Amino acid sequence: MTSLSLPAPQGFASVFSSRLSRKSACRAEDTDSTMADGEGYRNPTEVQMSQVVLPCHTNQRGELSVGQLLKWIDTTACLSAERHAGCPCVTASMDDIYFEHTISVGQVVNIKAKVNRAFNSSMEVGIQVTSEDLCSEKQWSVCKALATFVAHRELSKVKLKQTTPQTEEEKMEHSVAAERRRMRLVYADTIKDLLANFPIQDDLERRDCSHMVPAEKTRVESVELVLPPHANHQGNTFGGQIMAWMENVATIAASRLCYAHPTLKAIEMFHFRGPSQVGDRLVLKAIVNNAFKHSMEVGVCVEAYRQGAETHRRHINSAFMTFVVLDADDQPQKLPWIRPQPGDGERRYREASARKKIRLDRKYIVSCKQTEVPLSVPWDPSNQVYLSYNNVSSLKMLMAKDNWALSSEINEVRLYTLEDDKFLSFHVEMVVCVDAAQAFLLLSDLHRRPEWDKHYRNVELVQQVDEDDGIYHVISPALGSDTKPHDFVILASRRKPCDNGDPYIIALRSVTLPTHSETPEYKRGETLCSGFCLWREGDQLTKVSYYNQATTGVLNYVTTNVAGLSSEFYTTCKACEQFLLDNRNDLAPSLQAL
Image 1 (tube, rainbow, N blue to C red):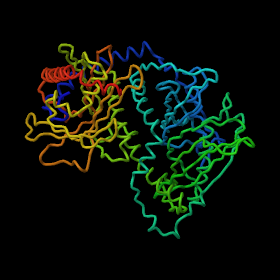
Image 2: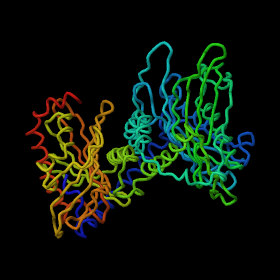
Image 3: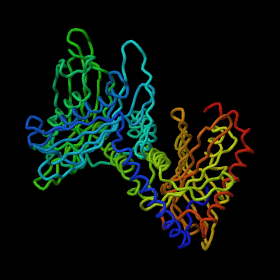
């Protein structure tokens, strides 16, 4: 709760390093004994599948067909979902998948799936896919996937039981699953808004049309009859089977552009708009929307109809798949340009360019490990949703870590520390006699933070991104040996609880704005991950936890020893508590909206 980013004395990091090293060693011994006693712990929803890749599973290059892999992934995930639900489940969606490695004949595919979190009638299932060579014992990571399944009973409404995470990994996945669900629910609107507002820059008019392949030449249409082997015990078509058929027509379309055997590298989210049953005819359509220097986007659409029973086709699914053509050294080859048809073809062409930009931003922000993301990521409308997601999920993941060490306790204000990889993190905790919703509204208003935090001298709202996210410019006074005040450009993201037991979240992280570049007047500071988690402990009782993560070289506090740090935190916490108590009755109208 103190300064956002201030240099620390040289001895400070070493003090914590030595203390935490000793504590880490003790924890390691405890962990070893715990693992010995509890060896064999396994998530009750975990399902594993291992398959040897046979020639019948492969494509023209002798590699495992992605369509076949998608069927295995969907089957494994469905079994995990049904193990938790205790009833039949259907695939609702599959998040973006990035394929890191191909799998050859004779190798083994290992698929592991488990339920990360259950909501009312839906659940998120996490899937990990690896491959191994039985002769050399080498193993590779192939892909990771997240699928949403919906429990379905014909005669009664399903209310799923909640999962109980045990390990640190399970706690992290459980915590972040709520934020991922939030993104899925607004996914279609998010993409629509980004495409409408994102300026597309291309040189279509300046290209030599004589060296371009007409998009119409890549068009593919195929029909499939849903038979009993394609469906589950309720007669609904397996989601994995539909995805496999989609991959098949997309590969044909891509091959017609490049006159070669393309490799599927990424799939944008599958979202099933409705079910199909045994006896349905599925019409699958694919076309190359755009070709870039080394990759191409293929759009695929699935429609269903029943012979003689329907006058129109039902839209079942759509997806966008990214292909490359690899040479003998597995390097992407240059692709020919595509010439879109006037009208819808040009629209799809420009939307593909926008999706590529969005996809790269999303993969960079969402998929990167925390250590690989720079402190200040440039903010713009095309990545705002994913920066907000990263902001909140980073704080939740920090909160879920289980190796925090209690460093001090002063009058029930507890200070915890955590040294992990390149970061030194702090966690301060206290209980206040204020309702959680009231504390949430007061602490999420950064304009009022100078009232209780001396390290916030001035706060300016730069941009109100949406109802839950805003960008602020913060001025912090000079402390210690610094001669200049510090300034920060901060994205603040707030979230209300997704379910009972979830905390209120106020997440803060640095971003870069062209309108607020570094100036000689201030020393630019950065915060990687910080913010508040607020738990309702009872009527008019809230546990307030503040987290702050920093590199060991640049810390957020000025102090010379642990005692000094504890005193600094205690003083700020008590000021925060008094602020909450003094203003808890001023928010009655606002509380009605929560």
